Image 1 (cartoon, helix red, strand yellow):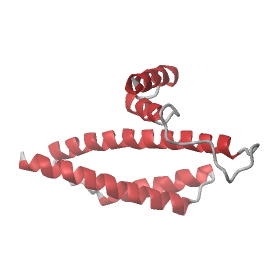
Image 2 (tube, helix red, strand yellow):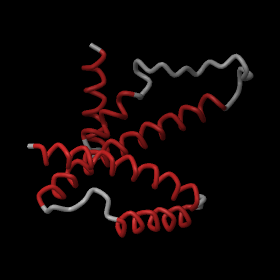
Image 3 (cartoon, helix red, strand yellow):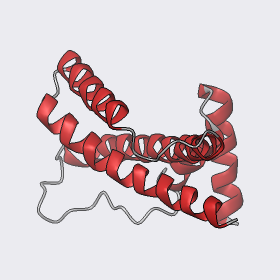
Length: 141
């Protein structure tokens, strides 16, 4: 029952905001329906604005996770292309280009570019390992 409800939310989100299916599902999964997150915090005064702010942060986190899931699917596609074109998972020039782009984008948004670069490098390392697994599996086929 809950899955069908989340699927309905995902469909609604996709149609309203042109959100890709995987992103819509991720958003629906944490949309508060069946979520384990609570607005009650005994350390906060009853009229605190923190629960509302936390809800906004949680919604933003859901969007970030959805975007990462979408990026992961694109990485799988990149791995298939790299297999076909006999390219390695790690292409140093591309890694540096993406890191520099993250720094530039962060600076333009008022975000610490060092933080952005560190986050992107961790993310790229993970996704390169993901590509390596796919490339290795294809070599064995």
